[in-house]
Structure formats: C-alpha cells, structure tokens
Length: 103
Image (tube, rainbow, N blue to C red; front, side, top):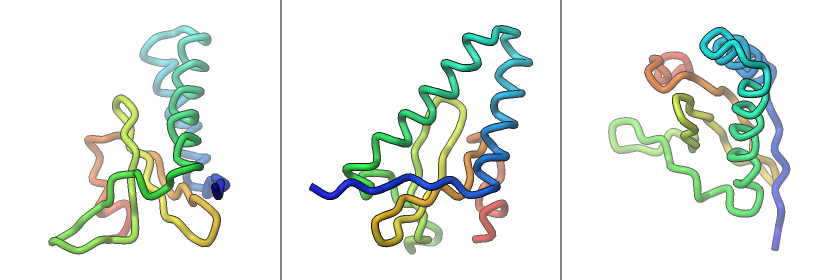
C-alpha cells in the first residue's frame, strides 16, 4: 500500500499559527490549544493512506482539483500530486474560501 507524504505550504503554516493564536485567545489554556492543533494535524495525517477519501471541492459542478478535510471550525484544503498531499490552506469554515483559494 502506498503511503503519501503530507507537505504544508507556507500559507498553510501561517494559517496554523493563526489558528493557534485564535484558539488560545478563546480558551486561554496552552494545553487545550496544543491538543487542538495536534488533533487537526492528526486528522490531516490520516489521509496519508487514502488521500482521495477527502471530500472533493466542487464549483459549478466541476472538480476544482482541491479536496478538503473538516475539523471542528476549520477546513484544510489540499491537492494530490504524485505521492504527496499538498496542504494549501487551513481556513475557518465560515471564510470566503472560494475567493481565498482563487477559484
């Protein structure tokens, strides 16, 4: 069975930092914040064996090339290339992600 590697874009890393700050602001607890990020990244890592199991992002009935993973209030958007899962962005679910992803 092929195992894909997960790669985070620079923007996705920035998104993770913002998520960390936002979660900490909301709960004021370092342990909760660390666990939240760990669970989010573990959910993404689960796709290493079955990357196509993420939900396809469709726009006007057409596949955009992105798949996504929902974790609580956030959505991780990724593409599959060769043997890699490329995490492009991790955004708040209520954001205008279609425009942010330039679709």
